[in-house]
Length: 145
Image 1 (tube, rainbow, N blue to C red):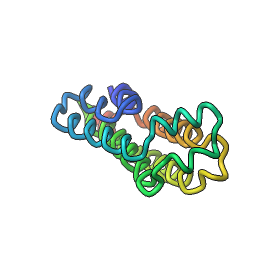
Image 2 (image 1 turned 135 degrees about the vertical axis):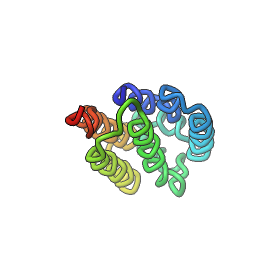
Image 3 (image 1 turned 90 degrees about the vertical axis):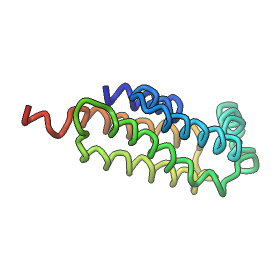
């Protein structure tokens, strides 16, 4: 259940909360995602990155706000992971989520030196988050059950 919630949140912030039946939280995260996406011009930047226009990305993106997006993204996926039922999460997994947030933030900071910076940062964050989710999918209390 935790891994499915995380995958839903990776697809779209708030979807993991929908999966966990936390409808109000999902609505808030979806609205935040729409606001951040619009402010950063994220969809346009992703399109430029996929077409190989790395030089245009720095001018198209609102980097002042983009530095906050990896933290928001990781917080969203962690919340989906930690809120999944039926057991409490194994909190050792948070290390992977923190590392993913740092990786994404460093990719934003050094985006002018990284080829395909948006795809690189996104895929590196997703790989780290999924690894942590799979490694600590079981509850920390499963040994006592």
